[in-house]
Image (cartoon, rainbow, N blue to C red; front, side, top):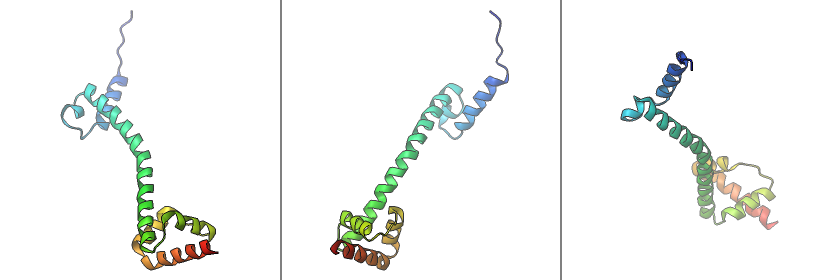
Length: 119
């Protein structure tokens, strides 16, 4: 069998892995085998985390909107139903921002939603 010298491919791969592992603790940033395992795991966690972040923010927005609704005497579900009937198309991110920063504007939105539900 002929001898295989990997040349630059091996060193390039190791440099890439160790570059991604920069800042990891102890041998995980210095030794290729441990760095490879740590980098694979971190990439998996990063992939999952990017999807979890969207879920967590959506639930945070819903909690903020719900708190604003409760302060104005309406439930979150009735508020969203009222906004749909009133043809007000604001996403949850904007609604939560309004609820936390501008209580007067949010109160006017709640009043419009209540009016649309009553009609």
